[in-house]
Image (tube, rainbow, N blue to C red; front, top):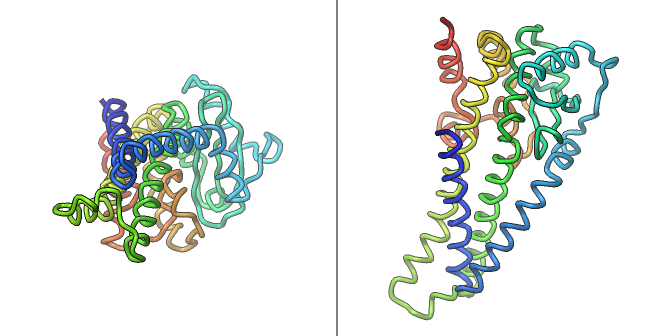
Length: 281
């Protein structure tokens, strides 16, 4: 059901992108928008892992450099039945972790230096199992594609908004009448809808990764305890993270107040912990 829901949301997101392109450029604009979306997805597919690892200055580490992390990952991949991913360490004091890569055969798991300083072995096991779950479910690709398309919709809407301010008019304006309402929908409603769909996809995959990760680790308690520590740790050591990559991390690296939290790429930690603890028999 989760895969069906995610697939449906991705289709809707792509349709919004094509529709907004069609509104401003007619049938030709819709075609160009579709081609643009396809190209962006291909770029995301092949290069997103390399880009995000470079952004956070992550360095690949071997078994001699981080034996505990390497051994935990090696143990977990046997249970998860996936290939051994590359292991990276990011020189960030903020405690966090993420997985990236287009498939289980081309994947990497990255932890920050900060997470190594505050979590014990069972907590690290829970976090790494969560990230390996993302790899097994191909969430790393799904969420990157969703973020790319949603970002492109916002970009097109912003370009159209500036064009309208400086006298440019959409292809539909010549018809008059409802064009003003149509323009308002495209400039405001479409980007908000795209963002909400992206958030729905991201939150759904986080819940799924928590559940599967707990099963891979053998217990939900390590991940549950880790999430609480990571939430506190990120408040003490906030990360200078890029908004476009926030969805990749196990906890939101961006600070958010009560209102901003409603538009977070991550579910509330309290709810995630509650669901994990409900798995204990």
